[in-house]
Length: 132
Image: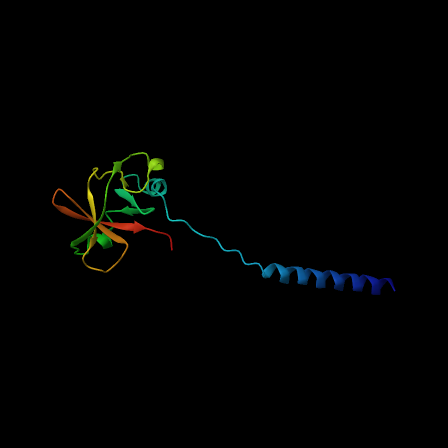
């Protein structure tokens, strides 16, 4: 009789545990990943030449981007502030580009994550640093 009660207890425990696990599987957690900010980019590369536009950090000197031949197209923005303090970055802020530098889309529509600037007659390509 005691063996039967113990067996029923064990079966009940496994059954309830299985139901609890099944119920927990109904809830699926999702995690959103934010794009890197200026501080994170500069922690990885303290010499990075970056600017922020529309909440996205753009970085130059990326080999595969520099190999592309791009022509400046329509102007999209301008650098409004220059800051070395990465925690103070906001839209239209750069760490190296001077205030007043114009930002352009490339005429070539190969990648919407590339923007161009012209500095001292030289076209420089900047690539959006995004998660995903």
